Every structure is written in C-alpha cells, then in structure tokens.
Length: 274
View 1 (cartoon, rainbow, N blue to C red):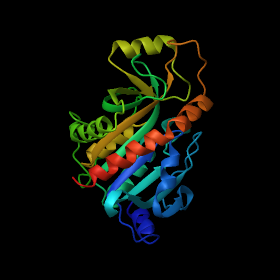
View 2 (cartoon, rainbow, N blue to C red; view 1 turned 45 degrees about the vertical axis):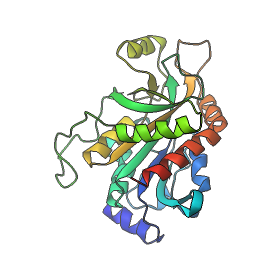
View 3 (cartoon, helix red, strand yellow; view 1 turned 120 degrees about the vertical axis):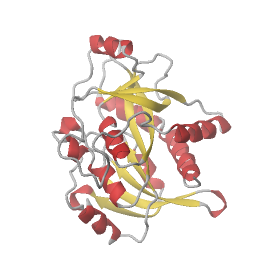
View 4 (cartoon, rainbow, N blue to C red; view 1 turned 60 degrees about the vertical axis):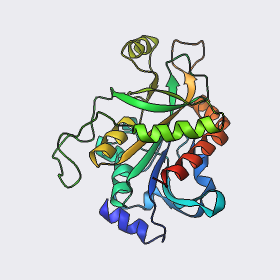
C-alpha cells in the first residue's frame, strides 16, 4: 500500500485525517465533498476493483465543509471489497491498510444490513457496538508484520465507545433516533435462511451483513480508531413475508441517504475536533 499512498499523494494536495468506507446504496455522501479528487480503483497500484451492486469503485479525497468556515479533510471509499466477490481477506482490507499508510488514524465503516432486532425499522441507522465474525476468515492470518501491529491484537473494544458517544450526542441534539447493536458478518453472497437468522438472534446478533468485520479487525490491528454505522435496509429472512433482493437494499439506502449523509457530516466534523 505504500506505492498506492504515494500515487494518491501525487494526485491531490489534500492530506485526509479521517477515512470513510461507504456501503451498498450509501455512495451519495461522497458527492458533497469540496475540492474533490476522484480516483477509480483500477488506477490505484495494487488495489482490487469493486464489483458489488451499488458500489461505484472510486476513492474520493476532499474537504467536508461545516459552519463558520470549519472543515475536515477526508478520504472516502465509494464502494468496498467483499469476500463473496472472490477476494482474499487481505485484499478485502486493502482500503484500510491504504488509509493507515496515508496517515489516517480514524475510520468510519458503514454498511447496509438486515435487521434481526425487531426494534429496528426499515431505514433505521444503527451504531455498531460489537461484531460476531462468522465469515470463517480473518485478514490477519499468515505471517505478521510487526511494523503494522501485534501478532495477537486485542479486540475488547473494536468499535470506539468514545466515537459512538459523539454520534449519539449529535443525533440527540437533532432529535434523531440512533440505535445501537451487534453486527454479525457472514460470507454471502446468498442471503441468510430463516433458520440461520434464528441462530444469529440466539447468539446475540442485532444486525447481519456481508462486510465490515474484516475491515474493523484490520483497523484495530493497525491501531486505528473505528466507528461503525449500519443502515437497516431490510428485515432479515423469516421475520417478514418479503423476498430479499439487492435492489431493495439500494432503494432503501437511497431513501435514507439525506439523513445518513447529515449524520456522517456532523459526526466527521466533531471527530476532527478530537
């Protein structure tokens, strides 16, 4: 990722402080950045290409403007990589390792998720408090590079309580409901069966999806502070009569994009103060 970071530095004078990964149907946020440089993944040395539905596949470097001239410089992955696309765990976390090489120390991971907890309405935004990795793979398998992080990194607090508190405070000030829950990651690409959802609920999962866990593990290995936010785009299998589809995920993501973008904007600006 060193070569990739040098390539990106040659394309823009902006040196981002915060990295953001946008999930399915949530890519519109990147359109609001000022002085933006857009770099297709295919141009970045050593970078995979995103093939997932609703993932644009470009890195956007730019500034996010706030009130009274305040701003924060960010790097946004508009689209991520998934194990179900056939990529290795190490390829899946390419973006996180690139962020670290660029000098970024805080990352925000977003995703579209199925709601297991019936408190969550369709379109709800949920802070990830923890995750359960049932993908059967880990991006840290293989020889460890001690320059990046320890062989056995602690995972007691993968998702920063401090950043969750910041997000909750912002949502409360604007009268916005912001839930919190445990995200369970599966391999995909098939959706889960009703029996699997019952099992996931029994082991403490509130949300289910096909991403995020590997990225969060890699981020903590690198010592990055992580905030995770899920958008509940559907009720999980067996909990309603609906047939699940990728098109539904994108439609719900588009419907909540304005509220989601506002939350991200406010939280990122608050993160820049800390």
